[in-house]
Image 1: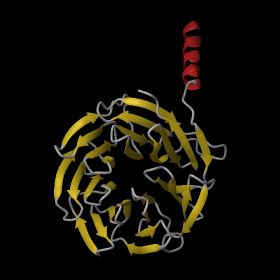
Image 2 (image 1 turned 120 degrees about the vertical axis):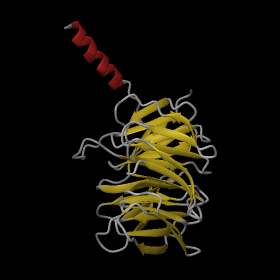
Image 3 (image 1 turned 90 degrees about the horizontal axis):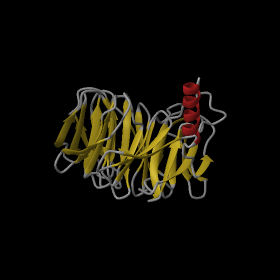
Image 4 (image 1 turned 90 degrees about the vertical axis):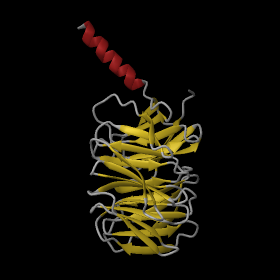
Length: 319
């Protein structure tokens, strides 16, 4: 009986000591399909179930624009904001759209040749679109250039662009993550893991890659050498990532999971620095929440947005 009591007491103690958010704001109350935070954490683009795309200013908690992605009932399943906050992109299964953030104008809407899976947008408005048929479209609307990258053999799960739009990182069910030139389509590095690679991210300059598979293998890679810097020290059998972003001058990696987790990692060692769980909402019919996007508002704070409609701010611990 003593052992059982001790176990229960320790469990309650751990739960009680779970770090809480510094600030929590209910941005939306209706269901959503996806959301993206700007790199600075002061803008949020949310694809809602019933009210279109909403661009929010998180400094004032005011909605800036409402956009409709293409035809009615053509909801965006993925979104992206350029690092310089000049452009926003939205993608449904059948089309992609580009928006100008300064005035809310639409810069174009294009049909896709296959079902869309993932989208990224660069500082110059260049788009990277991963498709279900294994191809990736590198599209520059300003210059009208389009490259169809055929380096993958199965569904593309995740795409990422460097801030200048020159480097592309893509991953697929074929167990490959490929770094390639988004202007020429020329492959630079091809990394293979033992399982489907479902999440990738480039840092702003394109010098670092993050790749995570469908089990518990996640690596940070030096793109110049093509070699691993660290592997995340994941102590359970499975951890999938719904989002990832390099932060604090590329010394840290922030990740989100489909299981309400926000985790901060050391890029150099792969060790966990801190972790938090986003709140459940009273209205939520499902107890879980997907962390859609993460960012740094400043070196000491992390912000997250999740499928429960909450924007939460977390303290970066001194380490």
